[in-house]
Image (cartoon, rainbow, N blue to C red; front, side, top):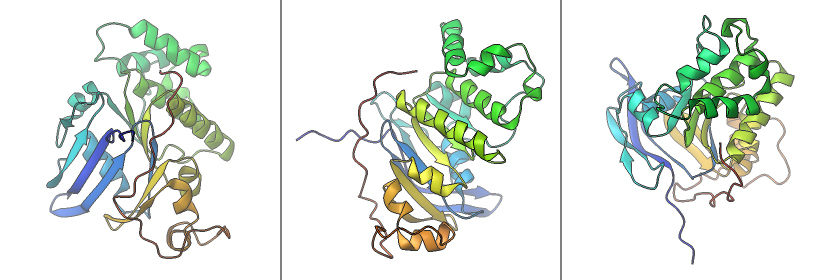
Length: 273
């Protein structure tokens, strides 16, 4: 029997918040290596707080965050963001995700500030992945459209060579055709071997492309399971997906997926960024 590799990232019993108020209450998630994992839920559920706690912007009051980029186990609970980045984890916030007064190339170079060598090679790879950025490399990032800024934010996060990306609302405020481009690029990045956690209000679209998903509500784990299974679960549809588009093949109503039920390991990727 082939052993299942441990997840690249796990949180266990996370409690975190602001001032004296806890936003997260015992939140536990696991990200299989090479997978896309979506975190969905209503506004105020704690989704963005979860990402900030993983990345070190917030220090948890309880719980643990374990990261395994190279197979070795790193306890990154409360570790500062620069040290988390150095271990191979990058975060793309929803807002203020580029330096508007810097050029596109300068933004990308900022993403490589931890690298001692290979910056030119990383730049070239980003220009291949995002051709528009090459064309406008000398332009100020502040002149980009919303979709172009999102592409730049993703490219800058990739400059450090991460194994895991945290994306906070990558489609927020974008026109539908631009959302298509962003999600296509997310798939392409994932196909290159990058694991991902995506917090996304476009829950249907996010779950449809995810290997696994979690539903948070009031800062607590509510449901979890394979993305397609959650997408068709009657209770998830009624409570969190607007009650529309339920398919006949939906999973049994009210099934709360066990934490032990994990998705199979994703297929081996053919190339890496």
